[in-house]
Image (cartoon, rainbow over all chains, first blue to last red; front, top):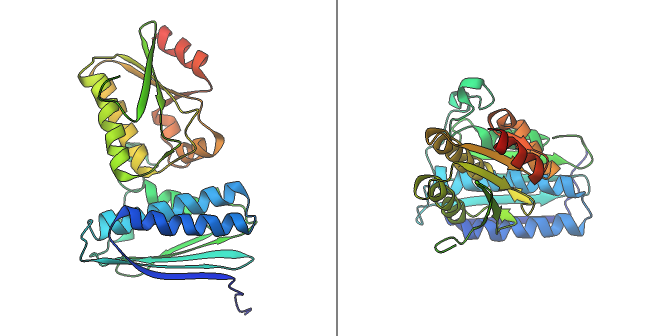
Length: 143
Length: 120
């Protein structure tokens, strides 16, 4: 298996504040633009990362400043890798309603996860549901 | 309009046309403020026909979709009608993936949206 040739990496533990998440998100978007990723690919990464950060800060750590969010980002010429972990109690993926079912269209939950899965090439959660790992393969058709 | 910071509103006949000040509707505080301003139009100012023009919007997230769903419910409760227009293709994809294009009345542009509201 080929070793990923990372050209940029970031590994930070941030407090549970949306402004902190925004700072890292902007750093990632800047790198993708510098590497000439297509605008629709950058849009997808932007959306997925925004959703994952909000999930960690708001739903995971509940804006608790005493809790941290660990963010790992890696960029290679071929792909973008992201891992976000919070200190919350996690959730069970199978209990999240399918937001595209008619009876769930107006419900509050599930849309963020649905968007991440559509805009990224791979999205996985750990067993306790407080860590999400995702990848976007450059040039691969997603949403 | 006094007290409104995230929206610009104008009246076309009995339709209230709403434009968004922010190009990226992202920050959680801003999203909830946006929601409050939209709800005020329905609940306090009793606007029955709302057209949300998304021409300035380049980005939104599921939090924003949640506020729009709440707005749709409030408009229905007040026997009003809500139409969304001028949604950029990437943003429309967000509506389509979540199937909210089935929940909302989405029209291409403002004239089409006004026609749909005036026919209601």
